[in-house]
Length: 331
Image (cartoon, rainbow, N blue to C red; front, side, top):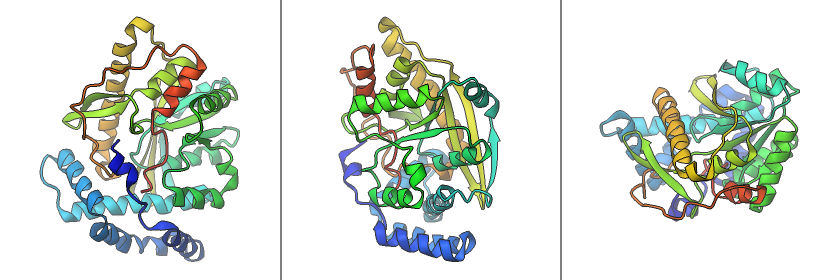
């Protein structure tokens, strides 16, 4: 993840977000969606780097140069999911048509009192997970995110639902503190959700094939999972247009075990598997990709500083800080 991306200012800002919230709260979701067209136009005209990176991504996805209409659709899809987050966090989920897949395995773990690591991505809407809380309120969901990323959106959403805000694990804390909070959530039988497709600047990464070219994926989440030994499931909340979402859960591992001598090859195999499933779902919902930076930059770099064996919780804490496990998409 480049320092240039980290330095980009948020789009819109606090005033624009609060205006959208007030309008949506007073007039409802359907009239508010009419604002998505000018929002997409704003990003098309004012956000050159994101426009350029959208075209690069869509060209990889479609195997041809992307049109401006397709870039506009990409921005509009992103804006639509941001608007829906306002309603999902206000627990107004009845207006959405959410189709779930793979719940049987997830329910099996949770009903047995096992905490589960949910590994997601900046593909679609991770916030649609909140639908589970309305269907099974006894389930606990803890989301790991860096509150410093997309600060205006984070502050707005926390004000909208303080109860949900209280369950957030702040990835901006020290590494051991983050790992201990994750371990505590798992011990309580909670789902702990992390976004694992994007690394922090300076975090150790590994290049694997993605959409036809090598892309860097963070090592940290897999080292963290190997220490915590919790079941790992992949989660994708794919926006299908209108009020429709597909919430897909896929079992990935009943508990990752990485012996020291096989650790590097083991992590590589895990990331390859994850990237393959991410590509599968990205191809099924191509406009749901919300990493608005050049995801393939630096993929030819070689990294020799693979971290030492993670054999204790503090080491897992260092791993937790190495991934951009939440936030950032709101830029």
